[in-house]
Amino acid sequence: MSIAFNKALVTGGAGFIGSHLVEALVAEDCEVIVLDNLSSGRLSNLEPLKDRITFYQGDIREREALDKAAKGCAVIFHLAAVVAVQQTIDHPVESAKVNDIGTLNVLETARANNAQRVVLSSSCAVYGDDPRLPKTETMTPKPTSPYAVHKLSAEHHARIYSELYGLKTVSLRYFNVFGPRQDPASPYSGVISIFMTRAVLNQAPLIYGDGNQTRDFVYVKDVVNANLLAAGMNDPQGSIFNIGTGSQVTINRLWELIASLSGASNQPGYKPARDGDILHSFAGMDYTKSVLKFNPDVSLEQGLDMTFEWYRGQVTDDRGGQGTEG
Ligand code: NAD
Ligand code: UD1
Image (cartoon, rainbow, N blue to C red; front, side):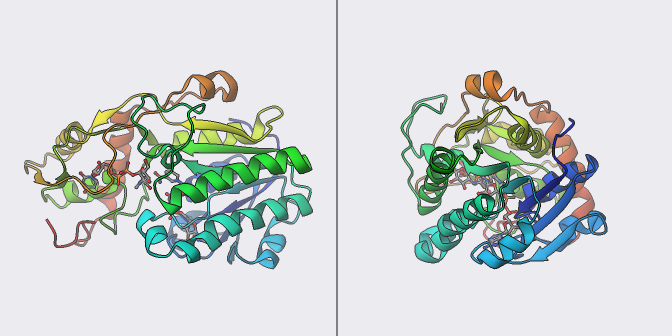
């Protein structure tokens, strides 16, 4: 994909999705600035690119750090956030300072620096436990965690910056993103990162509930493409798009697919469903396909294949994401 800008800031660029975005931007010969406080990201995610980017270890809560990083950037991709939902439940005020005020700082910085565009990473979490499927952008959001409230508030801030100040903004509601470099370290890490680690270590996974719950898993490179399209689309006015695949898979089937890649023969253990776990989720993609012109390229099977190869190369210790629980 060719891009029409030559300098971009990626907040949270040392994280899972951010580092893939940085990689794609560098491949397009874009000058890339990364601002990340390394709270959940890692410098090792950017290691192969370190001579081709400018990295600032800094915090989006600090305007000065943002202003310095954003100088001359046409586009700001805003991914930095407290992403662990539980952390936002345990520390609602501290996490709001990052997710809410930090996002306002990013928008203010963009305005002050005459950035052409801000692309915001939002989440399907804004839909909460509304049982209607598929989730479409026209549904009234029903957030059920501080994290989801922060994401919804960030979307609204982005939209009103568009309306009040003419700053062009796009919000992308990612569904369940997966791929290389997703950190499996906590029990609340993405299920694919945990299952991959388990499979590589030849350990049985834990499934919460009966495993018939479904999710819409989107490969990280597709999410990157969605960001690039959002940066280039005509005249966004605070637009909001679902970024998923429009299909769903059960957690039981997901383990079968991963086990078949690894040859793991372990049967999963089952535990009661997690509190607040939604049963089914998948993205309505009509609006995204027609307006953003985004179509995911990578099938679940292809994505799992590439992801498994990466985890196989990485897992050398017993980090399984589920600690000693399973
Ligand atoms: P990640 O934790 O790997 O990346 C977040 C990055 O932000 C990390 O590198 C972290 O160090 C950085 N960061 C956190 N607080 C910061 C601060 N105060 N200042 C500067 N940097 C800070 O998570 P990810 O999965 O790559 O998520 C990227 C974005 O996508 C987030 O906004 C997240 O909410 C959103 N998202 C992710 C998913 C998913 O499935 N992974 C789904 C929906 C939305
Ligand atoms: C995801 C987001 C969360 C967001 C929510 C909103 C991630 C990592 N989390 O949660 O931030 O609030 O969408 O819709 O993207 N599971 C197991 N075994 C495991 C791990 C998970 O059975 O070891 C199950 C979970 O109970 C769940 C499913 O797998 O039913 C997916 O879990 P997870 O990857 O954590 O994502 P969500 O729950 O969809």
